[in-house]
Image (tube, rainbow, N blue to C red; front, side, top):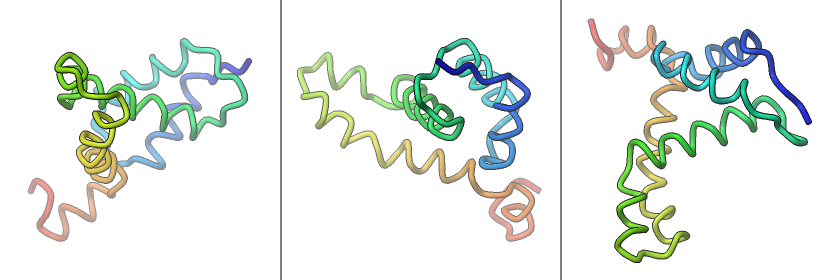
Length: 104
């Protein structure tokens, strides 16, 4: 089993997802650091955690399951939204600002 140190997790997230808000970075670091990761790289641990958290908190995934939608179909329906959020975090916030896409 592998446990990743919080500083290492934070460094990875900030490098690979520079647009991720500070509060989300802190949350993900805490979630990842408290688990034993069996044969997972830090990138896999970050990806799995981001996917799961976003699926359950930022989409209608759980509601779809309650309505009887098959798990695979519910995941298929919400995945574009999850992909969009993560893609936004991968963008450098400074380049988005310079291009007029980010906040001034």
